[in-house]
Image (cartoon, rainbow, N blue to C red; front, side, top):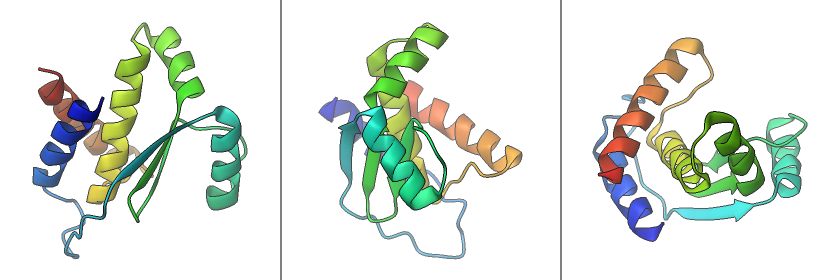
Length: 123
C-alpha cells in the first residue's frame, strides 16, 4: 500500500490542477484507515451530513478512508477491498490537488483523472 501511495502521489502532483488561480502547495499527506462510526462523526462534524462516506480529505493533508465502506463497496462492485481503498486514496489526493466533485461536470472530470491515475499506478 505504501508503494502504491507514493506512486499515486507522484502522478497526482504532475496532474494539472483545475484550480488555476492559485499555486498548489503540497502538504505532508497522512492517510488514516478508520471505521464507519468514526467516519460518520467526521462527516457530520465537518460537512454537516449524517452517516458514513467513503473518503474525506482535509486541505492540511489528512485523508480519512472508511474501511467498512470500502468493504461494502468492494462487494457491491465485485472489486477487492484493496482496490477500493486505493481508489479512495487517489480520490483524496485529487482533492488535495484542487479537484472537486460537487457538480456533475466536475465529478466526471475527477472520476476520469482518478481512473487514469489508479490504472497507471497499478501497472
